[in-house]
Image 1 (cartoon, helix red, strand yellow):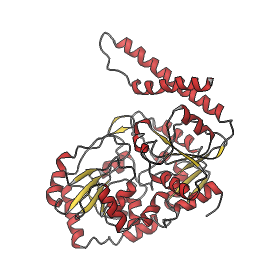
Image 2 (tube, helix red, strand yellow; image 1 turned 45 degrees about the vertical axis):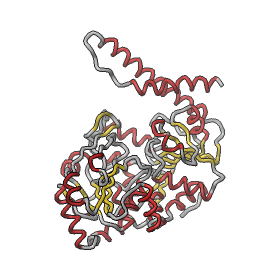
Image 3 (cartoon, rainbow, N blue to C red; image 1 turned 90 degrees about the vertical axis):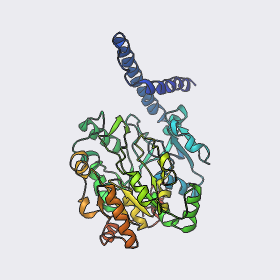
Image 4 (spheres, rainbow, N blue to C red; image 1 turned 30 degrees about the vertical axis):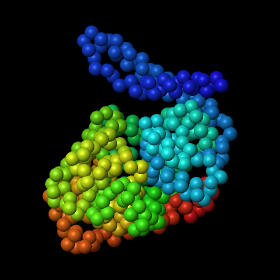
Length: 433
């Protein structure tokens, strides 16, 4: 009881500190007061993290619940991606396991109306579940300060085939408040806790091993999240999705899913989205035949105002899982996002709107392969080029370019609709695939 009381006090303080730990604007007569207050809150925040760390180590010595799995997707923001696919498979095939979702308090509403057991991230109950859990399954990194109990199996599914350089392969990190050397060191320290790492293809397997300096077991299976693209790519299911989202049934659907830019941000972890597509021009030229679904990256903090494009542009950034949007889309427009590797499984056309490719490739991230030569669709820099390319596709009956098969064979060769089964059998039942 003492531990619970102690943690309850610290948990309440954690959210208060996080909310207010940004420095205030200093006024002439109050700058010293604010500076002292800010430093005090930072010290308290560090003490709280130390307390949680201490409790993780203490509680981690308790016996594990061998049937308990904690899932998390994109820092607790979504019920999506590879963790969702594994969860749904386990729920159907192995309901004797106890499965809990770790959810950021700002996104609890996304889970409330589902038949899902969840816990508020960083709460006292979360702490007890995390330390007693036999398995952790996530697609992004946990905070570095969380120690992994010896009895816990940490399954890292990751969240994409890399075009952009990752982790230790990045020459210089441009994210706000980030020291490149420390970033790489911390990334590797976190990756050293992973017991399994899921890879979507041979190409990614080699990159992950080097970039994450990962030396434990790689499960080279394809991505669990892509199984649905094989099982639900049916007219009836797609029609149901259109009706669910109240989309017109007589128009083709364009999915626009750009990535984030490391150097365009409001603050650490909150990135901007600058609209470079001319929506007015797109609507006037294509609005009679098409609609556009916008899906921004989970790190982007924008709330799109598309009210003046009613019936043409739809903001689907908060839709829980992009997999349904893939199935809906007749055409994908993206840039350097890993979404195009997944979408390729559907064998549908893609365009790449890369207005800043020179800067992004040469200064921000760098690419793992020659994108200009190997992209499975045309690279475009203006809205006019996008419109022209779509019209050309119409004339060609949306036929895929000759280079598509080479791309598909390299990056989608493991995808067969059974990736989840392979991962589950290996991790939870120690079966090789």
